[in-house]
Amino acid sequence: MKKTMMIAALTLMSATAFASKARINALQLAQQIDDIQDVFEQPNKISQFGDVATFEFGTASTNTNNVSGAKTAEGGFLKKSGDSSWGAYLGRKSTNLTDVLTFGLGASNNGVGTAAQTSQAAVLGQIGTPNPISLLYGSKAGDMPWGVHLYLAQSDRKSTDTTMSGPGALTNANLGTYNSRKSSAYGVAAGVAGANWDAEATVGLASEVKGTIVTPGTFVGGAVGDELKFTGKTTAKVSGGYKMDSLYIYGNYRTTGGKVSLAGTTTADIDINDYRLGVVNSHIKDGTNFFYGVSYTGSTQKDNTGGGKLEATGLPAIIGLETEAATWLVLRASVTQNILLGSTRATPPTGTTAPDAGSLEANNTVAAGLGFKWGRTTLDAALIGATTGVLGTDGATFASNASLTYNW
Image (tube, rainbow, N blue to C red; front, side, top):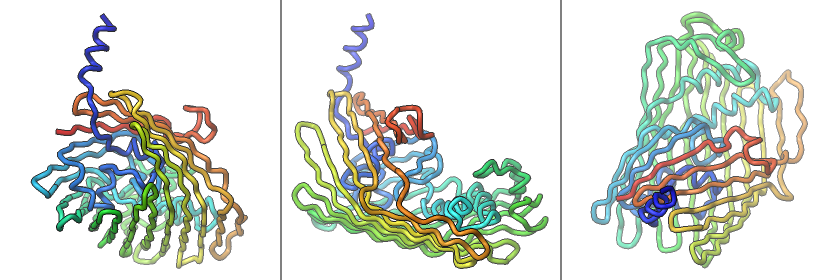
């Protein structure tokens, strides 16, 4: 009976395009891969996916420059009409706010910030920008696909949040409680592509997060009625790529930042600049994509109020594989690590102890994933975060991402 049911199930499965965070996380952001998750920063890809609905669930992802660090409870659709496509997506949070506040969250660990900055960033990060929506539209100008993505988020919560928590076991006593929690964020992205090239630009137009203190936190400071506020700076990111035979050459540059203030006094003024230049070589044959590549990365994170700065460079390499193991099953895996070059340098704010500067820590990471195809439906899962090579014993993100996609 079980054998009969299995045979019946397999006959219902057919080839369907995979498109999910689980897939791109398993392939560790391999830049040559086309996926529906690309459309937010590469909206020129909107018209290539047809009619599709996708849903994401799982825990936080620590990947940068792609998906939000927040939980992956989100989903949406794309609908094709002639040469044009349009759609909407709910729950995908901007990475820019997360990255700016993460600088504060990690500041006391790398020596370039203070306990107050860390705590204030923890509060603002928890208030966040809930319930965002993305509106998408793409079409063609001759043979060149183009697209735009409009990002909107706005919230006004009057209730008092008494569940504040943060890194290093920070509690309500450290962080305080807040009401009148308001937030907003707006941005736009546009992209265009030719036969062997693509170019994109993303602009964060405005972002703001604030809350009014009900109970002051011992680390945050301030008094009852004071306003803790984050105001984002204009964010800009440009990216592009060029295909040459089996090679994909790509690059991107981003500048972002924001200010944190308490009772009208600026407590942190963050600027972030980062870039990546790389190349990936893909060998595609008989349903298998084997690829390898290398990139050069650099970033500078600076607090203009206290002088704290964190600078980093790296030369990460990637090797990956995605193969159709059966008509109903796709397997994928990848490994990344920095090679030869790479360093970090932390400059502390005035009055703090200088941290050590030197080479990057060991960062080799193996990720794996699998996708099941059942008619027009696919289910992707990622097994990510293994740095020791023993699956399931390291990394909180192991088996943490899954996605359900339906094509019609």
